[in-house]
Amino acid sequence: MQRRLREVGFLLLLPLAIYLFACLWTYSPADPGWSHVGEPEKVANFGGKVGAYMADLLFYFCGALAYAFPALLLLVGAVVLRGAEEIERSPLEPALRLIGGLAFFVAGSGLAQMHFNGPSQLPAQAGGVLGALIGGSLTRGFGFLGATLFLLALFLIAVTLATGLSWFKVMDAIGRGLLALVGWIRDRSRRADDWTAARQARVEREVVRKVDTARQSKREPLKIEPTLAPIEKSERARRENQIPLFVGSSKEGEVPPLALLDEPKQRVVGYSQETLDALSRQVEFKLKDFRIDAQVVSAHPGPVITRFEMQPAPGIKGS
Image 1 (cartoon, helix red, strand yellow):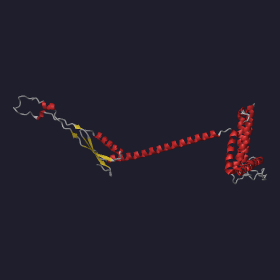
Image 2 (tube, helix red, strand yellow):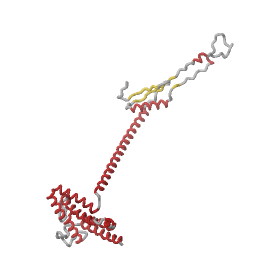
Image 3 (cartoon, helix red, strand yellow):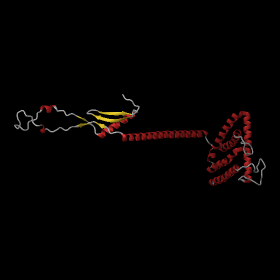
Image 4 (cartoon, rainbow, N blue to C red):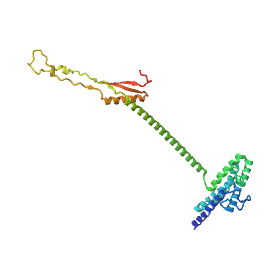
């Protein structure tokens, strides 16, 4: 039963809040109102004559803060729909909420009157009659700064009493949000810098590759001069003598013919053409690590070391 009554109360407050907001939003000074006489035949307010009178009355007393009344009705409807568990747990809860609501309109009207008082279509000033009374009295007594600080503190206290909102939790949540936003921006900036650096490096590598490919296609083949290792007769071969194959067929003291001997095969000591090309490219790349641009024009492999002849780029001196 109580659940159905709460739902009925919420369903009554919801359309009332929507109706009141429509009346305030479509307020026109030309409509008839509580503070002035308008044209009763032509009513521009969506709420009709009743809506025009209600909007004029709220704007006259509370100023622009009248827009808080629909929100207040929605808040009351939410409390009614949820139930009265919190009220039953604390007997002072209804009184604190009522005091907070009244203080909210008092402080809000005063602040609006002091800081947003400009030309408008409202029947009174930005804070209404209530804001003019509160803001003017506090300004004459405490000055503009003192009145502002007092009303601001009262406004924060009123919101806490009326809704149970903790401003310290709000500040903590805002701080966490700002830190998360700063971290996200910093991470995106770091990623953007890394992406830009990687893209620049990729472009530079592509340029170097194209230049190197074009240069390699135009370069002359390496001049490789193989070194023939001399064949030395071993000590054992010198000690041993060739045994005559045809004993008695030659005269005393005649040397056997050289045709009996086989010509020794010449051995080529060194690297292949592909290996020397690869070594030449490696030497050029190593020199580029030290910002030295040079080209290998010839290679002279030896039994122990391989000598490369370099052609430095224009403007590079060697010693």
